[in-house]
Amino acid sequence: MKKLLLFCFLFLFLANCDDSNPIDPIAVDCSVVACTEQFVTLIVTVTDADGALIPLDRFEVVDLKTSENITLDITFDAFQMARRSGQYPLYDDSFVATNQNTKRNLVFRGFINEEKVAEAEYVIDTDCCHVNIAIGDTNISIN
Image 1 (cartoon, rainbow, N blue to C red):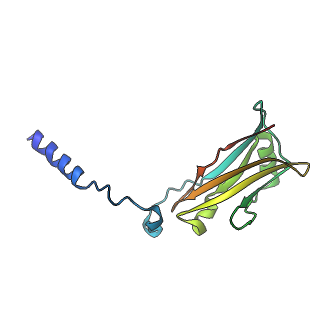
Image 2: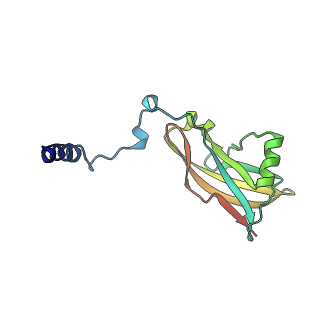
Image 3: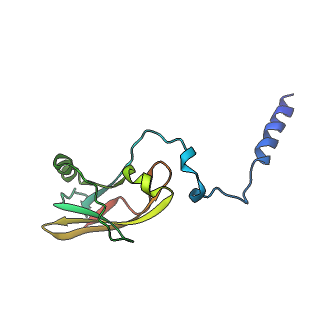
């Protein structure tokens, strides 16, 4: 009996496998997807070659396709915390509604005394619910 039950489960499992038609994330209908309540913020860390945290005077995030400055608005206190931690917001889930199932090419630039000292490019993948870094290193090391 146990062998028959195991065989039935194995048969059902194999019968439902179909490698010829992989799920296309672009074709997903986001209106039927259940998302978590989690809010994702992608962070980059800026350090020097020795690993010391770098306090930037300002930073910007620009969409490489449109040249639009999409830097997240943060409070003065949040910016001071970012400077102390060397961790700066790159992109977050606030962009999901207008960018579902897309990839976006961004560049992060950090400045000290109006001189660009850090720059890194990213490809951001946005699904129905959250953002994720598809390409790019979240650790930016400057000399």
